[in-house]
Length: 246
Image: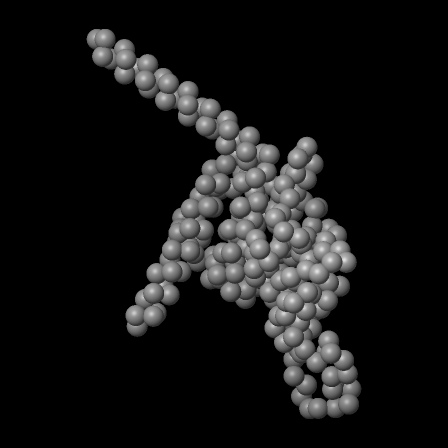
């Protein structure tokens, strides 16, 4: 019971931290993200039905991703820390040692992830269709084991699912290669996102927010807000001085 209580407290702390990060941006004009309650946010993290996707998750991801896409056209677009897997070059990279579920490696991910990465810079439409696929492309292009240690596991979960067991073993269904022996088959991100673990969903959102706050649009908005706040404080000081004179 004590261990369960500790886990619950830690999860509550993570939700609060994630909500704090999201809350910093929900009223931000550059994002156009409508506010929501912490209960709604937590419930959306647990939402698993792929046939009725969570509107809050769709809005959060779409607004954050579109902000990053818009930043690409700025004079100094942000860049991630570390070396993404697809930019590792000929040198050795930590991702070379990554091994996911059922022996999957970066070479397992590359054929599918490269396709998503080639189109991730296309803005997500208002109906929010396809945001899950864009997320995969963003993770592949911008993710690093330093900034988001689980990003490759997330890509694997979003793009593959367990291969159904054959009704009876035959020569045609027997594994013939290392890839088929993994027991995984390609899947669609929109089908898989709901079953992603809630802690991983929260981690992805926090990772995107850490990048978004570095974009020019958010930096400019924060600077304008700070300038406005400074002016308000100056006016308050002036009012207090006038009050004392009276």
